[in-house]
Image (tube, rainbow, N blue to C red; front, side, top):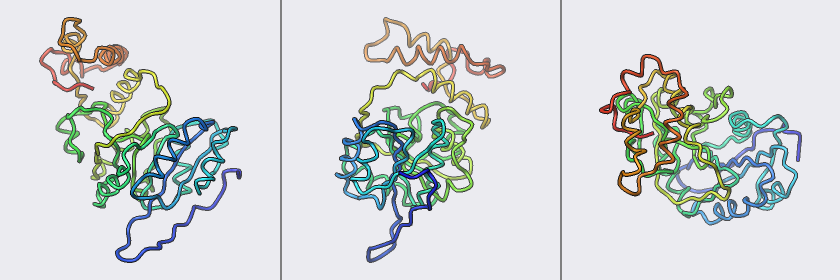
Length: 289
């Protein structure tokens, strides 16, 4: 591997007919040899193959690099303290394809048409990004714009994810991921793109995570509150009374309790000031973060 300084990977078109957008896959990893084989197999089974795979190694010492090289990919090194947005910006700067699929080192595309469907969703030049729906919440449409956020308010849901999301590189140029953020850099970037007049698409396809993750409801809810304040958007939420109703152990079966408990803790930890009177009533907005 090199020291992280390299020229952007050139992509050459080798096809007949109308020029299709070039596609790169960006995988950040650190000692991910246990999960990368399934991730790479998922890519190999796609009906549309990427033009290039670029791995960004972050202090990795196992066989991860060899796995990506064996797949025909390239690897560069991030030699600084790990940061989601900084590592992403570093990788994208070295990958000059029209579209970039950002894939975590433990997220497997189970649907072989996932890339094909995402690329189709990106066919309109106004679309900045697309990712899989990770929940069944119908609150947002499958083609979100700024007006929809203004009308509905902001909550944390499946708008866009850097775990399995595709973005348009030209929209990233001049508007990279915010490197001051510790988390939710993908959510922040998507909302900023919407404010610029672009669209974010959502596609329903199967994927899986090969690494267990803890409940991050509270963390994500806090990020949503902070982002809403920064973008001057209303927060779409049940309100304390309605959330307490959701926590009621006698409520109908099948309604998630743990998620709402995390959201309630997040709410309690926020300084929401004048927004409280708007959101505190039991008859407040009927959306759930």
